[in-house]
Image 1 (cartoon, helix red, strand yellow):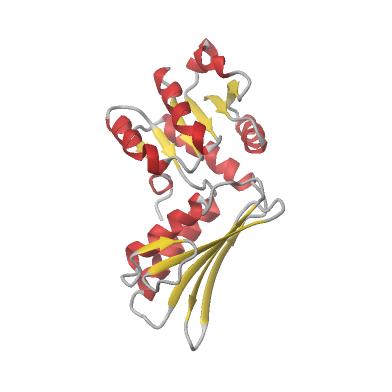
Image 2: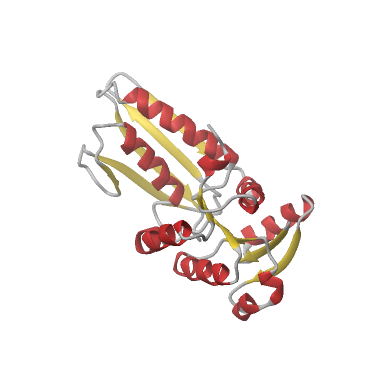
Length: 237
């Protein structure tokens, strides 16, 4: 498979190595200093572009890739509120985007556990639920896209929570706390607390390797599919 990379930071380098190890070809690498390469024949030859950039750049990158007929896999977060409707419409009209807040297989499993536990805990109102996410100091957006996805799953299944929020004491809101320290790849913890006991589930990423592998697996899936795709399409948990 021919892959283009959009964004060539730590994740881009790791994705490149995993893609090569799996027998794929990197035909184009686009970063902040060579945006003109979106118009190159090498980029247009890609089956899929894997995009990991800043929130403010992501949507524009999708448009540039789609204009060349290239499908996109993206792990960029922070663009959904402003451009979500346009992306959904574009994918309904024939464009392809595989988007995930987190491509880790472990996080996909953790998400399935989260949904199952939330359905159980809906029956036990004595438990309050809250979430905490920790990431490296370079991550500017908060809460993380993964935390938002997990929170939305809880809100969907726990009737006593109406929405999620940061810095809240409203019992109807699911509180999300964020911590930024060191080079932490990502830790997500969900706590159900009552007067009697505490139930906690945590996903703690050891490195970014799991995210990078998941992104390449998503690209392999995206090559054969179209529309707006998600982790739930690829992993049937």
